View 1 (cartoon, rainbow, N blue to C red):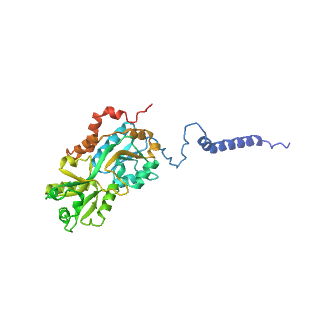
View 2: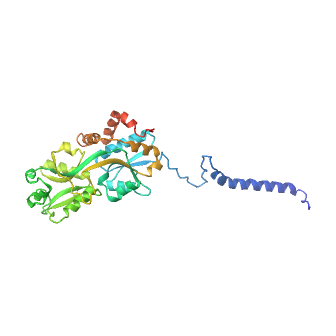
Length: 333
């Protein structure tokens, strides 16, 4: 075998060793990142931003759709989830935007605190059936119908929903002088709103026109009409603080079409299925939330009659119901 020239043996050994070291350094990140069972993620390379994993520490967004019962419930959920080390924010948004957000592939909002189940459109109810949206195991009962704030002889002239389409009766509710009375038919996106709109569009019902806007605007309108001593015709529901503030009369049920909707409704806390992955502790707690009609009536009265902030109402309720809340999310079996 031909020998190396003098002095080159050490150089060859040195270069070979150096090559192996360099190769090991290059391959180390790949080898360690592929290692199974270490439980340690590979460190990011210079210039790379490592994405945060989705865990129970991800921020959970709760929608506040704007009515008082929902606002207080949202604050209760924020406090209870916070005690479980879940990061929570409340975002005020339209009800329709909230449920659409929960149904999105990457839901920007994860929780609705006060979902009136039978009042939702077909798509939302399909999301519930398919498991895309989950519901609390417990619910309280809401009821709804057509209500009247009586004034100007409306109590004598208006006895049934059929009377609404008498021109003399309809004229009592005409505030803009166009010859048709107005009726608030609820917020957009509810099955009750859709059904009332369809009912008013039927032949012979032209003397009453439906108006759709938020519950917050409606309640300001109710205050205004009551102060002025004028009648008001509207979609209403219970529990709601307006029944303690005003003498309201339930005229009749909503004329449902195609069996969509109900006079009595299950009201749940609802959340996007993605929350099960984002924050398992939050999902376990929400599954056990249990509020009663009396609880929600108290929330509404405290905010709308007593003028208290939802945060303060939630804080007091939690202090008075520690034993009940302690069971939310507790393991069973």
